[in-house]
Image (cartoon, rainbow, N blue to C red; front, side, top):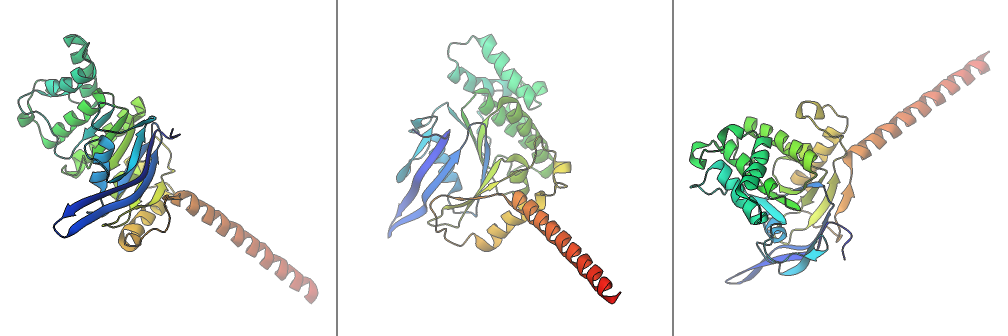
Length: 306
Protein backbone atom coordinates (compact mmCIF):
# COMPACT_ATOMS: atom_id res chain seq x y z
CA UNK A 1 0.00 0.00 0.00
CA UNK A 2 1.29 3.45 -0.94
CA UNK A 3 2.55 5.67 1.88
CA UNK A 4 1.51 8.79 -0.02
CA UNK A 5 -2.05 10.08 -0.25
CA UNK A 6 -1.86 9.94 -4.05
CA UNK A 7 0.74 7.83 -5.82
CA UNK A 8 1.09 7.67 -9.61
CA UNK A 9 3.41 4.89 -10.75
CA UNK A 10 4.68 4.21 -14.27
CA UNK A 11 1.77 5.98 -15.98
CA UNK A 12 1.69 5.98 -19.81
CA UNK A 13 -0.98 6.89 -22.34
CA UNK A 14 -1.01 5.99 -26.02
CA UNK A 15 -3.50 7.13 -28.65
CA UNK A 16 -3.90 5.04 -31.82
CA UNK A 17 -3.97 6.52 -35.30
CA UNK A 18 -3.92 5.20 -38.87
CA UNK A 19 -0.15 4.60 -39.02
CA UNK A 20 0.36 3.32 -35.48
CA UNK A 21 0.10 5.12 -32.16
CA UNK A 22 1.37 8.22 -30.37
CA UNK A 23 2.65 7.98 -26.81
CA UNK A 24 1.66 11.31 -25.26
CA UNK A 25 3.46 10.64 -21.98
CA UNK A 26 5.27 7.66 -20.52
CA UNK A 27 6.63 6.44 -17.20
CA UNK A 28 5.06 9.31 -15.26
CA UNK A 29 5.70 9.04 -11.53
CA UNK A 30 4.44 11.49 -8.93
CA UNK A 31 3.20 11.68 -5.37
CA UNK A 32 0.78 14.07 -3.65
CA UNK A 33 0.52 14.38 0.10
CA UNK A 34 -2.74 14.98 1.96
CA UNK A 35 -3.54 18.70 2.14
CA UNK A 36 -0.92 19.57 -0.48
CA UNK A 37 -1.53 22.00 -3.39
CA UNK A 38 0.33 20.77 -6.48
CA UNK A 39 0.41 22.52 -9.86
CA UNK A 40 1.63 20.98 -13.11
CA UNK A 41 3.12 23.08 -15.91
CA UNK A 42 4.27 22.13 -19.40
CA UNK A 43 3.89 23.07 -23.03
CA UNK A 44 0.73 22.18 -24.95
CA UNK A 45 0.64 18.56 -26.06
CA UNK A 46 2.62 17.09 -23.15
CA UNK A 47 -0.47 15.39 -21.67
CA UNK A 48 -1.31 17.48 -18.60
CA UNK A 49 -5.08 17.27 -19.10
CA UNK A 50 -4.85 13.56 -19.87
CA UNK A 51 -3.03 12.97 -16.58
CA UNK A 52 -5.75 14.93 -14.77
CA UNK A 53 -8.46 12.88 -16.51
CA UNK A 54 -6.73 9.67 -15.41
CA UNK A 55 -6.57 10.96 -11.82
CA UNK A 56 -10.28 11.79 -12.05
CA UNK A 57 -11.11 8.33 -13.39
CA UNK A 58 -12.43 9.82 -16.64
CA UNK A 59 -9.73 8.14 -18.74
CA UNK A 60 -7.73 4.94 -18.44
CA UNK A 61 -3.95 4.77 -18.79
CA UNK A 62 -2.29 2.45 -21.28
CA UNK A 63 -0.05 1.29 -18.45
CA UNK A 64 0.65 2.23 -14.87
CA UNK A 65 -1.51 2.74 -11.83
CA UNK A 66 -2.98 5.54 -9.70
CA UNK A 67 -3.43 4.87 -5.97
CA UNK A 68 -5.43 7.33 -3.85
CA UNK A 69 -5.86 6.88 -0.11
CA UNK A 70 -4.77 3.25 -0.41
CA UNK A 71 -7.16 2.33 -3.25
CA UNK A 72 -6.62 2.06 -7.00
CA UNK A 73 -8.45 4.71 -9.04
CA UNK A 74 -10.90 3.01 -11.39
CA UNK A 75 -13.62 5.19 -12.87
CA UNK A 76 -15.17 8.44 -11.59
CA UNK A 77 -15.92 8.93 -7.90
CA UNK A 78 -17.30 11.61 -5.59
CA UNK A 79 -13.96 11.34 -3.79
CA UNK A 80 -12.49 13.32 -6.70
CA UNK A 81 -14.00 16.66 -7.71
CA UNK A 82 -13.18 18.32 -11.05
CA UNK A 83 -13.39 21.97 -12.10
CA UNK A 84 -13.02 22.52 -15.83
CA UNK A 85 -12.18 25.70 -17.70
CA UNK A 86 -15.64 25.86 -19.33
CA UNK A 87 -17.67 25.99 -16.05
CA UNK A 88 -19.81 22.86 -16.82
CA UNK A 89 -22.96 24.21 -15.14
CA UNK A 90 -26.51 23.00 -15.82
CA UNK A 91 -28.10 26.01 -17.57
CA UNK A 92 -31.68 25.30 -16.41
CA UNK A 93 -30.72 25.30 -12.72
CA UNK A 94 -30.02 28.27 -10.45
CA UNK A 95 -26.71 28.91 -8.73
CA UNK A 96 -27.97 27.24 -5.55
CA UNK A 97 -29.50 24.32 -7.43
CA UNK A 98 -26.27 23.66 -9.37
CA UNK A 99 -24.33 23.32 -6.13
CA UNK A 100 -27.10 21.39 -4.38
CA UNK A 101 -27.13 18.91 -7.28
CA UNK A 102 -23.63 17.76 -6.32
CA UNK A 103 -24.31 17.87 -2.58
CA UNK A 104 -27.37 15.61 -2.94
CA UNK A 105 -25.24 13.07 -4.83
CA UNK A 106 -22.75 13.04 -1.94
CA UNK A 107 -25.32 13.11 0.90
CA UNK A 108 -28.38 11.27 -0.38
CA UNK A 109 -29.75 10.93 3.16
CA UNK A 110 -29.79 14.68 3.87
CA UNK A 111 -32.97 16.73 3.97
CA UNK A 112 -33.56 19.53 1.49
CA UNK A 113 -32.85 22.07 4.22
CA UNK A 114 -29.51 20.45 5.05
CA UNK A 115 -28.50 20.31 1.39
CA UNK A 116 -29.37 23.96 0.81
CA UNK A 117 -27.69 25.17 4.00
CA UNK A 118 -24.50 23.28 3.11
CA UNK A 119 -24.59 24.60 -0.47
CA UNK A 120 -25.17 28.18 0.66
CA UNK A 121 -22.18 27.99 3.01
CA UNK A 122 -19.79 27.24 0.16
CA UNK A 123 -21.42 29.78 -2.15
CA UNK A 124 -20.86 32.32 0.60
CA UNK A 125 -17.17 31.40 0.67
CA UNK A 126 -16.85 32.45 -2.99
CA UNK A 127 -18.90 35.62 -2.54
CA UNK A 128 -22.12 34.53 -4.23
CA UNK A 129 -24.67 34.81 -1.41
CA UNK A 130 -26.42 37.53 -3.41
CA UNK A 131 -26.79 35.35 -6.54
CA UNK A 132 -28.32 32.15 -5.18
CA UNK A 133 -31.36 32.21 -7.44
CA UNK A 134 -29.76 33.39 -10.67
CA UNK A 135 -29.22 31.02 -13.59
CA UNK A 136 -25.86 30.71 -15.38
CA UNK A 137 -26.99 32.94 -18.26
CA UNK A 138 -27.44 35.77 -15.76
CA UNK A 139 -23.91 35.42 -14.37
CA UNK A 140 -20.56 36.75 -15.57
CA UNK A 141 -17.75 34.35 -16.50
CA UNK A 142 -16.07 34.86 -13.15
CA UNK A 143 -19.30 34.23 -11.25
CA UNK A 144 -19.93 31.02 -13.21
CA UNK A 145 -16.48 29.75 -12.34
CA UNK A 146 -17.12 30.59 -8.69
CA UNK A 147 -20.22 28.39 -8.83
CA UNK A 148 -18.13 25.53 -10.28
CA UNK A 149 -15.55 25.91 -7.53
CA UNK A 150 -18.22 26.11 -4.81
CA UNK A 151 -19.91 22.97 -6.18
CA UNK A 152 -16.61 21.07 -6.20
CA UNK A 153 -15.73 22.07 -2.63
CA UNK A 154 -19.29 21.45 -1.38
CA UNK A 155 -19.12 17.78 -2.36
CA UNK A 156 -16.10 17.56 -0.01
CA UNK A 157 -13.87 15.49 -2.33
CA UNK A 158 -10.68 13.95 -1.03
CA UNK A 159 -8.88 15.30 -4.12
CA UNK A 160 -9.83 18.45 -6.05
CA UNK A 161 -8.71 18.52 -9.70
CA UNK A 162 -8.55 21.90 -11.47
CA UNK A 163 -8.03 22.03 -15.25
CA UNK A 164 -6.94 25.62 -16.01
CA UNK A 165 -9.96 26.95 -14.11
CA UNK A 166 -9.01 30.62 -14.52
CA UNK A 167 -7.73 30.52 -18.10
CA UNK A 168 -10.76 32.23 -19.63
CA UNK A 169 -11.03 35.00 -17.01
CA UNK A 170 -9.66 38.52 -17.09
CA UNK A 171 -6.68 39.31 -14.86
CA UNK A 172 -8.62 41.16 -12.14
CA UNK A 173 -11.29 38.47 -11.80
CA UNK A 174 -8.65 35.75 -11.87
CA UNK A 175 -6.79 37.42 -9.02
CA UNK A 176 -9.90 37.67 -6.85
CA UNK A 177 -10.84 34.01 -7.35
CA UNK A 178 -7.25 32.89 -6.71
CA UNK A 179 -7.41 34.66 -3.34
CA UNK A 180 -10.75 33.00 -2.56
CA UNK A 181 -9.33 29.60 -3.54
CA UNK A 182 -6.35 30.04 -1.21
CA UNK A 183 -8.63 31.02 1.67
CA UNK A 184 -10.91 28.01 1.19
CA UNK A 185 -7.96 25.60 0.92
CA UNK A 186 -6.46 27.06 4.08
CA UNK A 187 -9.82 26.68 5.86
CA UNK A 188 -10.60 23.15 4.65
CA UNK A 189 -7.15 21.57 4.20
CA UNK A 190 -8.19 20.49 0.70
CA UNK A 191 -5.77 18.44 -1.43
CA UNK A 192 -5.49 20.02 -4.90
CA UNK A 193 -3.95 19.07 -8.25
CA UNK A 194 -4.12 21.92 -10.75
CA UNK A 195 -3.11 22.52 -14.36
CA UNK A 196 -1.97 26.02 -15.28
CA UNK A 197 0.13 27.83 -17.88
CA UNK A 198 0.60 30.83 -15.59
CA UNK A 199 3.95 30.66 -13.77
CA UNK A 200 3.08 33.43 -11.30
CA UNK A 201 -0.27 31.80 -10.50
CA UNK A 202 1.48 28.49 -9.81
CA UNK A 203 4.00 30.12 -7.46
CA UNK A 204 1.24 31.95 -5.58
CA UNK A 205 -0.96 28.88 -5.04
CA UNK A 206 1.35 25.88 -4.89
CA UNK A 207 3.31 23.90 -2.38
CA UNK A 208 5.03 22.16 -5.32
CA UNK A 209 5.13 22.64 -9.09
CA UNK A 210 5.65 19.66 -11.41
CA UNK A 211 7.48 20.48 -14.65
CA UNK A 212 6.77 18.30 -17.69
CA UNK A 213 9.10 17.76 -20.62
CA UNK A 214 7.75 18.25 -24.13
CA UNK A 215 5.55 15.65 -25.77
CA UNK A 216 5.27 13.18 -27.29
CA UNK A 217 6.81 10.74 -24.79
CA UNK A 218 6.64 13.45 -22.14
CA UNK A 219 7.70 12.84 -18.55
CA UNK A 220 7.69 14.78 -15.30
CA UNK A 221 11.23 16.12 -15.15
CA UNK A 222 11.25 18.11 -11.91
CA UNK A 223 9.30 18.64 -8.72
CA UNK A 224 9.94 22.23 -7.65
CA UNK A 225 9.26 23.09 -4.01
CA UNK A 226 7.71 26.50 -3.32
CA UNK A 227 9.23 27.20 0.07
CA UNK A 228 7.59 30.60 0.48
CA UNK A 229 5.70 31.24 3.74
CA UNK A 230 1.90 31.06 3.97
CA UNK A 231 -0.50 32.79 4.04
CA UNK A 232 0.60 34.43 0.79
CA UNK A 233 -0.35 37.82 -0.57
CA UNK A 234 0.21 38.62 -4.25
CA UNK A 235 1.35 42.16 -3.39
CA UNK A 236 4.00 40.96 -0.91
CA UNK A 237 5.13 37.64 -2.33
CA UNK A 238 7.21 39.28 -5.09
CA UNK A 239 9.32 40.93 -2.39
CA UNK A 240 10.34 37.62 -0.85
CA UNK A 241 14.05 36.88 -1.48
CA UNK A 242 13.24 33.48 -2.99
CA UNK A 243 10.45 34.54 -5.36
CA UNK A 244 12.52 35.38 -8.42
CA UNK A 245 14.85 32.44 -7.85
CA UNK A 246 11.79 30.19 -8.22
CA UNK A 247 10.32 32.16 -11.12
CA UNK A 248 13.59 32.27 -13.06
CA UNK A 249 14.07 28.51 -12.58
CA UNK A 250 10.60 27.77 -13.98
CA UNK A 251 11.04 30.12 -16.94
CA UNK A 252 14.46 28.72 -17.80
CA UNK A 253 13.07 25.20 -17.81
CA UNK A 254 10.11 26.09 -20.05
CA UNK A 255 12.22 28.16 -22.47
CA UNK A 256 15.49 26.24 -22.63
CA UNK A 257 15.25 22.77 -21.07
CA UNK A 258 11.74 21.34 -21.56
CA UNK A 259 12.86 19.63 -24.80
CA UNK A 260 15.47 17.59 -22.93
CA UNK A 261 14.51 14.02 -22.11
CA UNK A 262 14.90 13.21 -18.40
CA UNK A 263 17.33 10.39 -17.64
CA UNK A 264 15.67 9.54 -14.31
CA UNK A 265 12.38 7.83 -13.43
CA UNK A 266 11.45 9.99 -10.45
CA UNK A 267 11.23 13.79 -10.83
CA UNK A 268 14.22 15.70 -9.50
CA UNK A 269 13.37 17.41 -6.21
CA UNK A 270 14.36 21.10 -6.56
CA UNK A 271 14.09 24.01 -4.11
CA UNK A 272 15.30 27.13 -5.98
CA UNK A 273 14.60 29.49 -3.06
CA UNK A 274 16.63 27.37 -0.66
CA UNK A 275 19.41 26.91 -3.21
CA UNK A 276 19.55 30.68 -3.81
CA UNK A 277 19.60 31.35 -0.07
CA UNK A 278 22.45 28.85 0.43
CA UNK A 279 24.36 30.37 -2.48
CA UNK A 280 23.99 33.87 -1.05
CA UNK A 281 25.12 32.64 2.36
CA UNK A 282 28.16 30.94 0.82
CA UNK A 283 28.99 34.07 -1.16
CA UNK A 284 28.64 36.19 1.96
CA UNK A 285 30.91 33.82 3.90
CA UNK A 286 33.42 33.79 1.06
CA UNK A 287 33.39 37.60 0.90
CA UNK A 288 33.89 37.79 4.65
CA UNK A 289 36.80 35.34 4.52
CA UNK A 290 38.38 37.24 1.62
CA UNK A 291 37.91 40.51 3.47
CA UNK A 292 39.54 39.08 6.59
CA UNK A 293 42.34 37.61 4.49
CA UNK A 294 42.95 40.97 2.79
CA UNK A 295 42.95 42.77 6.15
CA UNK A 296 45.37 40.20 7.56
CA UNK A 297 47.72 40.59 4.60
CA UNK A 298 47.58 44.39 4.79
CA UNK A 299 48.31 44.25 8.50
CA UNK A 300 51.18 41.81 7.91
CA UNK A 301 52.68 44.03 5.22
CA UNK A 302 52.33 46.98 7.53
CA UNK A 303 54.19 45.14 10.28
CA UNK A 304 56.96 44.18 7.86
CA UNK A 305 57.31 47.81 6.71
CA UNK A 306 57.72 48.91 10.27
